[in-house]
Length: 154
Image (cartoon, rainbow, N blue to C red):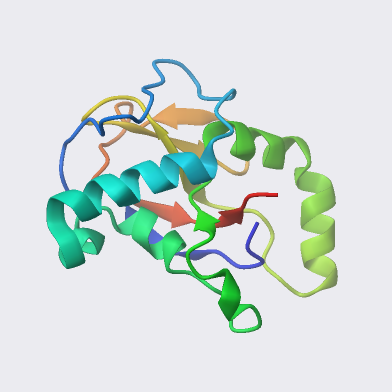
């Protein structure tokens, strides 16, 4: 997980059910495919829009293009976390927050987008404070901006 989060971004600016991206009709706690999900959306959007793809799937392109200044070689390796990864982060939140506090970084807060999709209109976002998953149909759509914090596969 990145030591710092990025700004808020939209999951998508359009309503498309991404081909080859599994749709979760219930909380995506078994989805650990962060990087595969991210790659699927990146590949789809680039095939559709070429160099303008970042405008249509901003959350995914922001994490894909992310690289801390101390690790520029990681550019293109970061991913939007899947629901299962976010669930694991919540299960270990106390220890993670304690470590982040020790190095003067912001604790795990805010509402985060996951890379887990529900359908063409909705994706899943996560309340960091409670560990609850909400499909965006409850409050919003993929077009609403939520917090983005990249993760790396390990």
